[in-house]
Length: 189
Image (tube, rainbow, N blue to C red; front, side):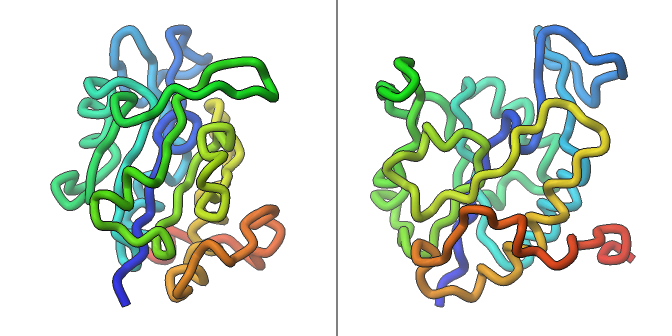
């Protein structure tokens, strides 16, 4: 069975970036943005890379993704793809009367990935209305240094990597079903 493709968003999922710095020093200056890595981001990525094929799909610019991906990933060349806003589809969100850059997984399928074996991790469900069975929604990261979402997500994903069809697994409220988070400090030793 092929490894599950884990498609990761950047902003508010793995990092927080804003033109106004927070009260602490940023982890990265990417003018005009001050960028803060979500706590445990690098450890999370190393951990999930053991069982998943990784990819990045952001609704930010390609230049932003090119600058940020090498900071997060030990070996960006091992990613299945790094896609940006150019691969998104502008779509109207009728519930909020706004336009969003939707990430349609049909594009991933056209690149040879089986949607039964594709999981998307994103904080913006409005970008995945047509991908609902593939989406694991995380709480938005807004710079809190005490954020602990990623160790919990790693623990939940450990059970998912053996599923033949990830779309049938209930993902709503996933965090309530995690008995304990992955301890990256112990996993690294």
